[in-house]
Image (cartoon, rainbow, N blue to C red; front, side, top):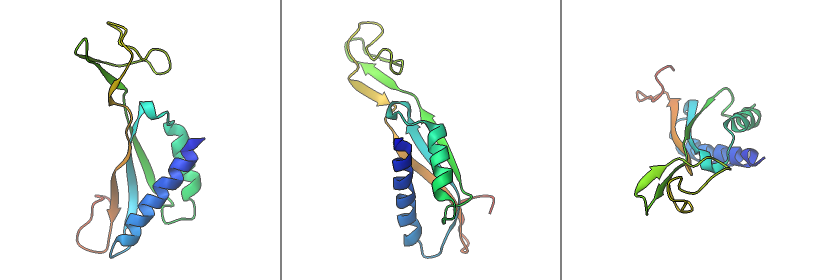
Length: 126
């Protein structure tokens, strides 16, 4: 389950950001963008996050995952298409193998919602 390792990396990245802040922010949500071609299962990622953040500075925070579809571009046909994961990665029109992926490989932190003691807050419900 590579979601466990990904969650560990996510926690370390957020911890580095957290430690660099002048005040300890109260994190409420972490928003991720996860592409379908990464083969990351959002449900497994959610579970791993909940387990690994218990009793940490992220306990009780919400992990919000936005999936992006797999979209490829066929240069001979000059068109985008959505390959079926695990079934067909070639252009449905001309059969050229998929080589130009436009979307679906993303795996990143989009943004973090948080509150702090200063006047500037990012999360609207603190």
